[in-house]
Amino acid sequence: MSTGRHMKQEATYSQNPVAPLRTAVPVTVILLTLNEAHHLPDALRNVAGWAEEVFIVDSLSTDRTVDIALEHGARIVQRPFTNFGDQWNFALEKLPVTTPWTMKLDPDERLSSQLKESIAEGVMGSEACDGYEMMRRLWFMGRPLHVVQPVLRLWKTGKCRFSDVLVNEHPLIDGNVGQLKGLMEHHDSRDLHHWWEKQNRYTTMEAVMRVRGDALAAEPRLFGSPLERRMWLKKAFFRVPFRYQLYWLQLVLLRGVWRAGSGGMAWAHLRTEVLRMRELKAKEIRMRGTVPIIPCAPAGDYDPRVLASELQRRVFPRDVPVA
Image (cartoon, rainbow, N blue to C red):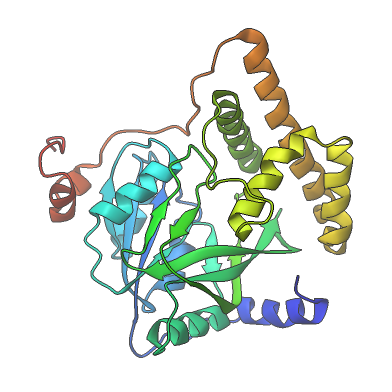
């Protein structure tokens, strides 16, 4: 966990405008989108002139997502959503990435200046790792929380695959993983209504996975890798007495969200309720004896401009719909 002084310093990095690099970093940025018009312009501006190339895999958005992608020069294909793990593995297998490095970026994430510099140093160094973790700071209700978490977002092209799960997919790196300096800012949802809608979908997916006995992102092991240890804790959580009270205390005291004021306390309460909802939904599935239809955000149809593109026809040589 970063100290308060360190967090203040990083906040300065994240708020300053990013000066464009003279030459692009040899990184291809990939984003998955579905109705991300509220986040996408800032996300694309954040990596414009820095990343060598940007690809978008869109799940048939009904808003201006495609317009924004084309306006900013991103290369876009469309594919109906299946699940997060499958969609990412499709992107890694089918997109014509030519750079030596690939980066996952969600539309609600932004790279700070220091993180961009650290990435450039990492990928251009003579002793580069096969993948890199970076620290991501969470935002809630338009304010930064005093919560940072390591996320793996960068890897050598061809060295990564994703866990094939409905939700909360994880990149699995074939090789050694290093650490980068600087913050990735996670702005999450545009408002609380959108945040709760997303959590409602995700908790249903998690409940379905739990009842079906689906494999987790990694083998749960208490003394394994950080990801394996995280999966062990995730599996053991629902057997712990007073788990919700303990989880709330962990967020408020150990992770320090009390420093973010009323917004931080609201986040701690709602995150606790998200876990409770996941458990209740799994219980309901068992009581009713039926698995609900996997929820997804509203999707539309293919955009004729994307269907007519060379990239779409290259990725889907046989089964691309006719524009």
